[in-house]
Image (tube, rainbow, N blue to C red):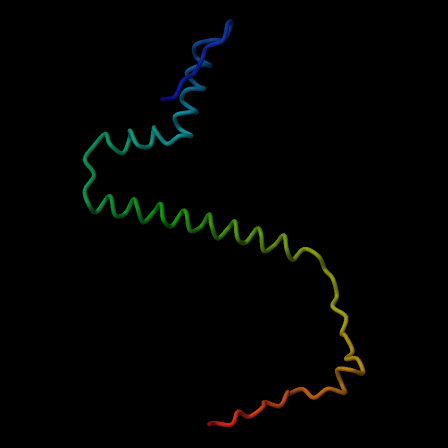
Length: 101
């Protein structure tokens, strides 16, 4: 249950506003509005689809923000020349054949 303590000298209107904000943040107000009237199965399906779409958009935006933060640096890649050892070793390694008994 959500509690709001009224401090000395605080107006009741300000305390009610704080209570309303807490209830809204916890989702209690949305639940009260939803339960006020009967919700048909079609309405329930559409509501769930809307919330799923909203969550998907929020997740996409969060991933996009992370992607953008990771690519902010404009570093030019310098080509790395192969060393003498890498040129001397063959690119494929021979596979030893196993004799069957």
